[in-house]
Length: 329
Image 1 (cartoon, rainbow, N blue to C red):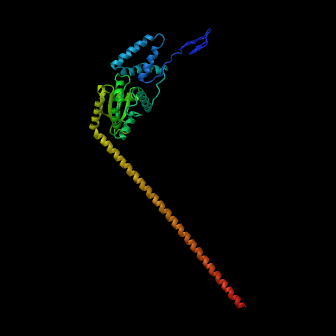
Image 2 (image 1 turned 180 degrees about the horizontal axis):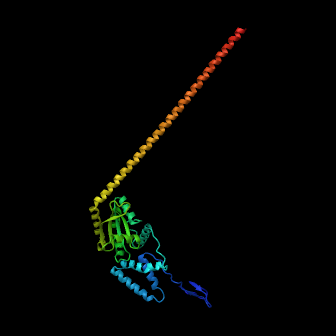
Image 3 (image 1 turned 120 degrees about the horizontal axis):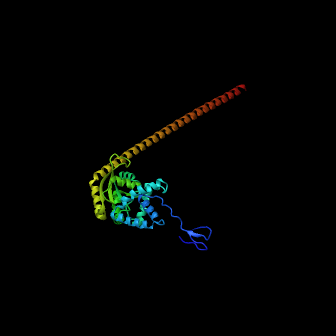
């Protein structure tokens, strides 16, 4: 914070009995974020308090040690539970903002593109169950990338594999790609359900038979750890999975085809009904018009006959009158 002189300056000035002096704004506790970001922000806040600078060095050294050993991603959720949860309950920390699955995917996409570029598979914007449903509708498998930003291999995996053009094109053609980000509740839940042996990991998922609406999934294969450093090997492993489980995809395609045929039949039946209804309406309208025309013609004929009779009667009366006139003479 800048100090204010006699004429003023930056910062907030507080008057006492003498000259105003600028004081640095009080540090505010951070709002709680995800399990990782919230813990790290809180430790940074504590380390920056007056008299606690030595703790900052301890936190930094401990964090680097945990990151090198790969334990950071395991320690942060525990620290969040033991450290931040009581503070939230006591009202010292704001509760973490609720983030929808689509918002989380959009945030991850923006962060990924900022760090690793815009080349990557299409990140599905939604929950894992929604991604499974989309994959089912498209007769594809769902490829889940288990990601933890705190893991030492996360950055290299994103750079060397996820941002690889060959991998991105292959995945977009054959899968619905969903990111299980450890910073989100949905990502942590999926990771806990899948229980991967190591991170980062790619898991091929298929919607479980009879699950419906994306509820329930079957893990078909995993590619994890150092194997992900080989792009060609990863693509080959995923291709082998597609070949191994091709009957499932074929069954899904047949189901989609059958549904499409059923929809086409229903639409055709509806169209035929509408055509028949239109024809019936047209026929009824024609019959009504013909009946009206016949009635009008009959009425016109009757009026013409009446006029003819009246004219004949008039002519006969005129003739009788002339005869009577001649006789009277």
